Length: 337
Image (cartoon, rainbow, N blue to C red):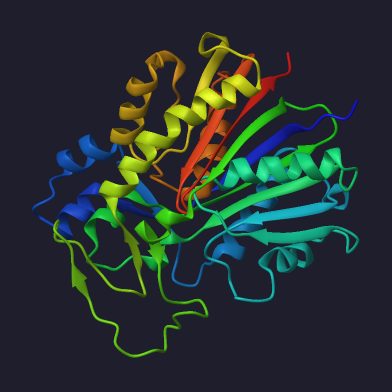
């Protein structure tokens, strides 16, 4: 019987660090204590000016290959999740195939998703394995949201950091088997988390872009990342509890059967709100965002890699991602003893 496993995970964080002290220096009305208590974040890693998603993805993949003795020649498919690709075309995954020395008979594609991206990537990788199309899938997440954020947008600067992760998803037994998924989409929320210009519909060269200040004093424009925090919070508060319910149902589990819950690391306030609403014991809920912030599609693999390091992966683990799109997804992974 064919199965799909998470075999190894590594990640890369850029060298530049944005601290709460630095944010406080630029926005004195936001104290260091206020930032840390509200977000649970103390530091964020920021991509260098000449460092892009492919550069970070390359570094994460090379760390994976080195740390876990994986040969590039064993990879037969590359999946890259990014919303900040190097180019509109060609596909960044194709560039990575060449730079990583992965065989030319490997498939490669980008997919554009945010905070649910790792879950969707696991679903795609599992499908490729179950379909007999691939045996070893290199799943990469790489995001440079910092390049979309207006310098005076203190709210988004406080939350987001840059990062890349690389996971080997394999038909060969690994750390944990990938079980069943629940996925969801509601495009009605598209404009609540958006970079409006830069694609084909609203090109950046079109005139008439001007800065706007929101009710909280954050400044942005249509070339930058816009997030309606209130609407995103409301969506998350509504969608995630039912997502968890459906994931448990699909996997024929009760909440008590889950040893650890790893959610998208949005911010500490939202995570605590969800944990309490779903009634998850704090000991069973994993946090990892203090020193990297919200790294979008990389938050779950980074947290998962550290949970593995902390020996927290036992029996059933529930993964859940949610955000831009709106898009959400969850699954169970079952640790291999």
